Image (cartoon, rainbow, N blue to C red; front, side, top):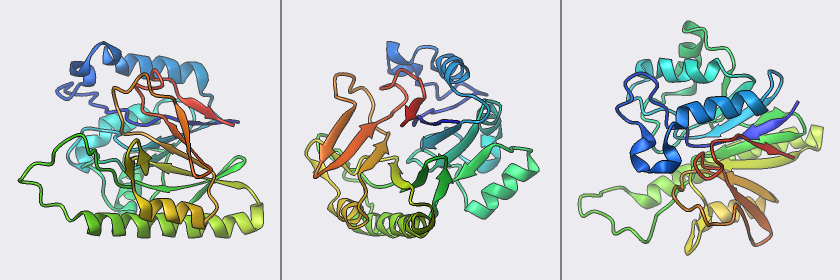
Length: 240
């Protein structure tokens, strides 16, 4: 029984109006690639963590086909929210939605922690600003408020994980959608929290098109690994 991770599925299994294939050759036939690779490497007793950007749906009820597509694949799935998951709702509403639609293999990581095999899984969406892109004058986001909210969510998750660890002694691994550190960007509030809880391994998605980038780098003795679907050739990556 193994644990895998893959982010940024960007599903639109019904209309195909939001296909990622417009972003170049790497994305051509990506839904088929994801499914074939998943079926090849993941077994029914395995778990796959999906850290965000799951479906292009705008409302929860519109996400059913994409979620059922994931549900039909082997293994248990643990999903997290990404910046494009506008269909996301509260955990209680999502779990009720899953039950009503017979979606049985998907669990949710949101303000909590989940014990999986030899690991305790924690995390949050996080926050990231690409400094190479000039923000639009119309952007009115309160960055400080967003960061504070994500720090609170991450702390809730880490506190839950720490309580589990006191009993199980298992390693806490943290998953993000956004990278807490990337090139010249550092989200110091999140990084400080990782240090406070002695986290040594993190996984993140969101970044696309950087195919010459190393898949793993270190920041102050914390290992960060990028698992965006296109970066890992749409193959779920095993965590060891």
